[in-house]
Length: 108
Image 1 (cartoon, helix red, strand yellow):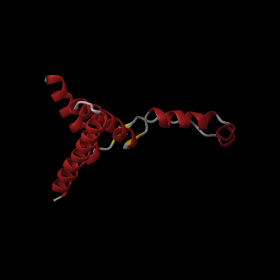
Image 2 (spheres, helix red, strand yellow):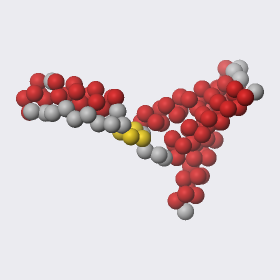
Image 3 (spheres, helix red, strand yellow):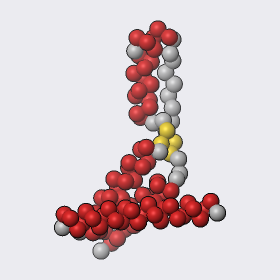
């Protein structure tokens, strides 16, 4: 049952992205395949950025804290963390939509 809901939400995410692509192509007189590629790329980057943990942004803020006066006063040590991405329906749907848009846009 869990896989069914995951699949339904993944298809729903792809349908919403297709609707956004169609709206952009209709309003701006842009090609649908080009807008599919761009919407897929932007949505993939945004969903992966917000569903990841650690990485460059976390390391930057942790280094700022470690080198600040408050961090020095409290004896804060800098701990480097590696990034990890959680796999969810938003990431899978966005990446699939991007791949489909990429393949279709550059295959034709």
